[in-house]
Length: 397
Image (cartoon, rainbow, N blue to C red):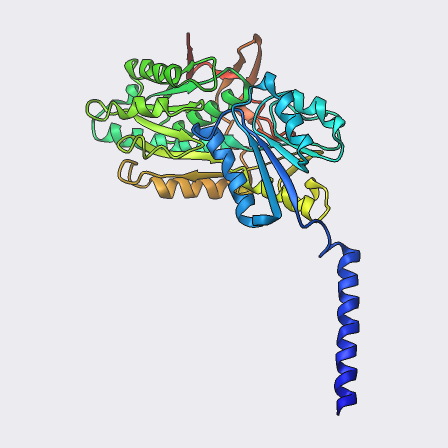
């Protein structure tokens, strides 16, 4: 009996050793047991954009705990990127993530071939030749913008139905940072979402010429409110526009639609809903890839164009948060869910479509006819729709 027992034990040990060896060969249990990870932020976590991006850092910490050391640098301007980048590289980072818009990263990546550099995309990457260790990524924000527009349109329709405003007062305001295609794509998707519910709605846009200025953003929102806008949204980085709307709550209410971060705490009486780009799926998957010694694009799930990746609702890269049920119009949740399911089923080719002509603000002779539609993020993660639909969008000076 003892011989049988010993034989069984020895057989099990041999099989276990072979199994472990097979795991190592297949790189299933191999890989790394520790990483040093760097994050460089263009602002700090008090601003919605950076706070939203920092949630990806939190997700990595939650998943890997003591297996990772995380180093951060905040309030780094684009033209000041080199010094903090070198600091993190020299501190032993294996991978560094950036939420800024600096060309310094792509230029410096070849100097550190053993480090992976992952940057939120800031330009059209289609056809671009990039270093092997440089990667770009972005959620398809226009999808969330369109669904936000549906929520705004539901509220406008309620206001019209209750006699608060008339059809011809369906005016939406948008506080925008700069006239880049990323910003234009977002606010165009937003007003098209509004018009899917309220076909006569139009929009006014005011640029602040800065990403992050509470005073400028609040002032721009206040001007739009004084011009008769009944809904305000933004593509800037502070809570200024939300505060401007909340200050109307005791008189003629103007409602707010957020981006990146919940605004119901600062605007409980006027905030409707928020869309956010979710950076967590990409960032966590990129760390996963390094842990198992895989290429990042092998592990990340999304639309891949070389070292550039994007995705929308279908992969969890975009989501709707903070629906303020007491303020939102009845039926808003159902309308949001239906729109999200449409994106998941068929993509977003239905968004930039209709009887519209878009005009390039830098070259008025360059136009686009949306009768047959435009497919955003088809070949790059960076949004490229940079045309103004002049019949329904007015850019204020």
